[in-house]
Amino acid sequence: MNTDELRERLRFLNDIGIKELRLPPVAMAPPTKIDILPSLSPDGDTLARISADIGDCTRCKLHAGRNKIVFGSGNENARLVFVGEGPGADEDAQGFPFVGRAGQLLTQMIDGTASKEGIPIRRSDTYICNVVKCRPPENRTPEPDEMAICGEFLFRQLMTIKPKAICALGSTAAKAVLGTKDGVMKLRGNWHKWRDIPVMVTYHPSYLLRPYNQNAKREAWEDLKKVLHYVYD
Ligand code: URA
Image 1 (cartoon, rainbow, N blue to C red):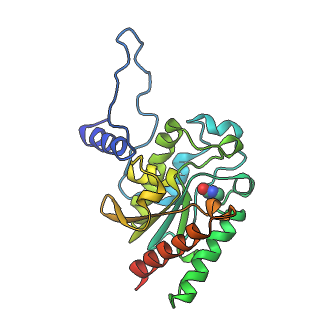
Image 2 (cartoon, rainbow, N blue to C red):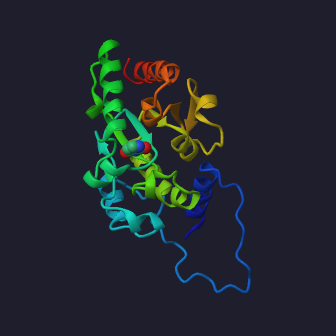
Image 3 (cartoon, protein in one colour):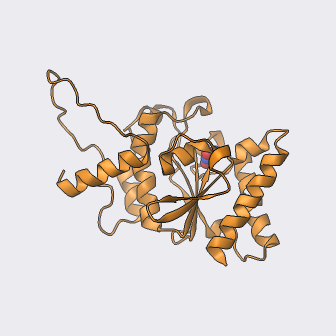
């Protein structure tokens, strides 16, 4: 690994909230292969290349329970990227993000809001992916090591697409993209930044599917309106 690659790797770790690195005890044997992941931003990176680099991934424990890797879907040149947490059962079975109940709500939110606001786009004009590409067991929250490993691929996806804005769905996506511990309630509704790209955080559609979340639903629609107008006006 050269100095630039090391700098980029440290910046990535900082971005996802890892501020301190502990060196292994000196008595430990050095790892035989230090760089288990490809470079963070290879020249001429493409989504196809990132997907090929993921390959039949076994880099973290999530691989053991997955059926399909859920890489992402939508327009490779999208001006807007949505980032979710990780695949659920439907996504794991089909290999595509947000195809279950939460996905149907996300589609309604994007298509419905765009149409009401007179913005001529649909879900398929955006790009949608997750922080982790394999389904966590029992849909648990992805763990820091899983997010750190898969986060590199997410960041490459974002760097390759270079959208005008990113919409982080829920606190796991916000944490991965912004490297913050703050929750959605605190972050939502205002613009943040990943590198130079504006990031809006809003509620995860699964949260909106729960009863008694009328207020959150209204706020999510407001957030989405803000994002759509910023990106497409
Ligand atoms: N929830 C997510 O965060 N992502 C999906 O792809 C589906 C449900």
